[in-house]
Image: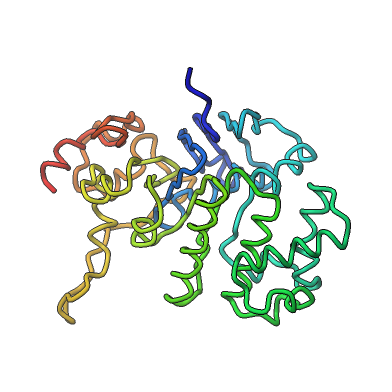
Length: 328
C-alpha cells in the first residue's frame, strides 16, 4: 500500500474580484510532492506563480475565492479558518519571500523575529528561543551570527537579510518550504550561495521545496521537476531535464529560445515571444497562450486543452504537442 504524498494539490482554482468582474488567477492546478522532492515553478510575470504560493499559504487577497483541494501531510488546508491556518503557517508550511526587506519588520531585531515562531509554535521561553535563533543563523551561515541577534534589518546587506528570512522559515522545521524568487536583487555570487544553502538544508532536513522563479537557468540547476505556468494553467510539467531538453509546449519553447546565449555575436538580437501575458479579466475560454502562439488552430479557442502525456511523468496542455516536438 503506497503512502499519501506530503503535498497533494488537486484542481486548485483562484478567482479574484476585479472592476471588470470575477477573474480566474488559477485554473485547475494539480500536482503532488513527496518529502525531499524539489519542484520549480516558472513563467513570465502575471502567469500565476506567486498566486499559487499565496493560495498554498492561505494568504490570498481579500475577496478571493479558492476552490479545489490542498492536503499537507494528511491535513486538508482548504477550508481552514485563519486561526487554524496560522497554526500550520510558519510551522509545517513556510515561505521565503522574494524581497527580504519587506519580509522583515524594521522595528524589531532579527533575533526577536526568528524567535517569534519558536515561541508561538514550539512554546519555547525567551532564552531558549533566542539560543535557537542564534543556532539557526549559524546554520544559514550568517557571519558573526551571535552578534547579529540584536541587529535590525537595515544594518544587514541584502544577502544577509535573505539568510535571516531563510532562518525564520526553517525555525520550526517545516515539511514544505516555498521560495518565491528568493534571489531577486542579489548579485550572481550571492544567488549561487543562497541557492546552494537552500539545497543543502532541504537535503539535510528532508523537506520538500517549491522554488518559484522566472530564471530557467536557476530552475534547471536546482530542482528535480518543473511546472511551466501560463495564464493560471500548468502548460507543461515533468522532470526538469526532460521538459527543458524536449519541450512540448510552444510557450516553453518560446521561453527557452528567449534566453541569452553564451558566445552569441554582439549584434545578435534576442528572440522574443510576440504579444504579452493577457490580463486576468481577458483570459480566453480556451488555451491562454492561443493569442501568442504560432501553432494556433481554431480548436485552441474553445477550451483549455486537457493534459496529455508527452513522455513518462511529462504532461503538456497543447492540442498540437506532438507536432511541436517533431518541429523542435
